[in-house]
Image: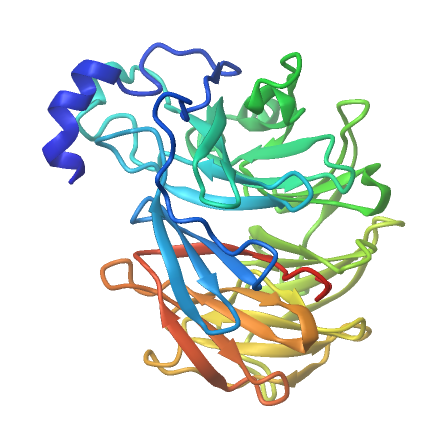
Length: 405
């Protein structure tokens, strides 16, 4: 469909990223003269999952009560190139879903190659939770990857992986470091004065998570083997926490998952295949466990974990596919069941829902639809599943009213 519409839409609309400046916001897409005819989603009446599909350029909305897909909604701004929706942040009180558009095609490739003399900028898009119509968007730096919303809803943080910058040769580490943007949501929505400030943090920052009280945030630095501590109020990086493993070597801290109280942070490192627990108050490493295939441990690559209780967490694992249940105090692996391709191909993110329910985003091979599966909370076996679109990436749950989080 994108290819068929490309010529007409490119002439009429132009393509984002060709001449616009980062920090510019777009006007809301909905025009009162042309009202939306989208299907209204049962917000508040049912527990809903919003899942980005990075290859299909869409968001799937799943009714978690019936485990059925209510809608696969196309999103993005480019009629030709992949928009690459990745991370998302949900503002329940405001009725808004914030989605990162990463534009993963290298600037030297694709139909817009002649326009992109430099790396292409990404966008953050604001969508209405009730039908996913676009409320506004903001152009940011190249290759945005992670997003987090402050508990008081006053600030969004956007981390930019910017692989091209991180891959620069030479000893100048500062030149390889990319930014985390500190953004007031009104900047996207056009409801207040524009306020977006870039803070240089580290090489290839990927995931970002707020600590309690929003006084600091933690950013995984895939190009520095560390977690950076960001002060969003002072726009400063007061500390860096090295992420290491006993055997040494590159670690590449990638995924991050705070506990519900935002006192502890689980970091998954994809090169060292290890999981690290960090105290978010003292900024100290509590433990590190390697998924090295030794007896009782999985032998795969860990991704985005979920806290199932104050004392336990689960970590999805790829190559081979499975999941690990860890004791939060010691890091001991309590269980590590494997999954077949039919169960869950390439588990990417675990999510804990209300009532002890546990879900897993299965990204698949990006050529066939991925899945969202529900797990038995005790055995971690797959109990229900629903097909999504291509390359499901990240998920957020909007609970039914009165059900808790």
